[in-house]
Amino acid sequence: MERWTDGRWVWRVAAVMMAVLTIIPSFHLSAQDYRAQAIRILGTVPLIDGHNDIPDAIRERGGLDSVNFGVSQPRLMTDVPRLRAGHVGGQFWAAYVPVTSMDSGTHPATYALEQIDLTYRLCSKNARSLAMAYTAADVERNFAAGKVSCLIGIEGGHAIENSLGALRMFYKLGTRYMTLTHWRSLDWATASTDTARRGLSPFGKQVVLEMNRLGMLVDLSHVNDQTMSDALHTSRAPVIFSHSSARALANHARNVPDSILKLVAVNRGVVMVNFNPGFVSEAVRIWGDTVTARLDRLRAAGADSTTRADSLKAWDAAAPHATLAQVADHIEHIRQVCGIDCVGLGSDFDGITEVPVGLEDVSKFPDLIAELLRRGWTEAEVKKVAGLNTLRVLRAAEGVAAEMRRSRR
Ligand SMILES: [Zn+2]
Image (cartoon, rainbow, N blue to C red):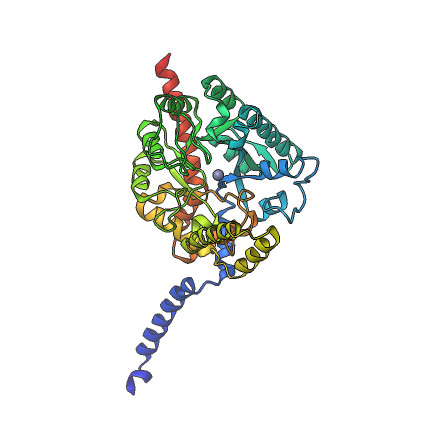
């Protein structure tokens, strides 16, 4: 009883209350507070996304004359207003080259050139918001000027048509990464969707070293595990996975297994997490396989296209969904196995047909950063995943290129 009338106790209680009040708010920030914190952070470092397929999406819709990228495009996942809303600082635009161009008589190199051309025109048409970038320093300069950097990555090594000369010219045209394969294997590199176990051929290793010498990042998304391993043992510069997630969480061949993540840690590369629901959620991946098998059975039983479409619609209604939280789980897993320096973002927006709940388009990046902050990540850590890791790798590749050129001459 007397304790409460004792003046010293009153002060002690008051001091404890003050201490508690200063600690408690950090545990009770609202979602809005984390989002505001994320946006403030993205004002200090450029968020760089490793893979966006808008050049191909625009091509499919009839080209730049048919799509005004500067205004809202609700049927796409990317446009200038949403890049701004998403506080994107730099974007690798994919010069995607379909593997079918190898059969159709179109030269894959021509296809890649056309997509690079489209990217340049896209960027110059929206010059108030976008600017080309070829180096880490360019990205930083554009960011300081309030512009989104446009970086070019070729998706599919078939684009070089087995010519190192073509590879060198693609570098001169601004290409800063090349994904070694797409869905189909080449004679020098094997795709993740191939059952063959082989990896890089001697020419494939030459391609990797020439990319190192030029300062073009080696992108291992889409290749099989043996090719990943061969490239990691060949490359003198850090490599990237421009759009791949963790296989331990979703058992898709396009994802990166833990054994490779450990090699990426040694290589100092970066794995940029893909948002494709089938790569993010194991339930979605299994569901996708089930639907394919059911459709095959319907086809075999002679069901017509209307019946198949109706069945697909009914199945879709019961389909599981991937979530933003699951994407954050992939980021945390890669961090756990490979370290905080080797995780980044590679949405695959406009190259995927489904999206995780909460990550519907490029305007949602701050929500993902906010989720990491909510999970207790520090500001310094989220800055790395947002863009600093990718910038570091880009800069490291530039350094290796300079060193290799010096030592050869
Ligand atoms: Zn891809």
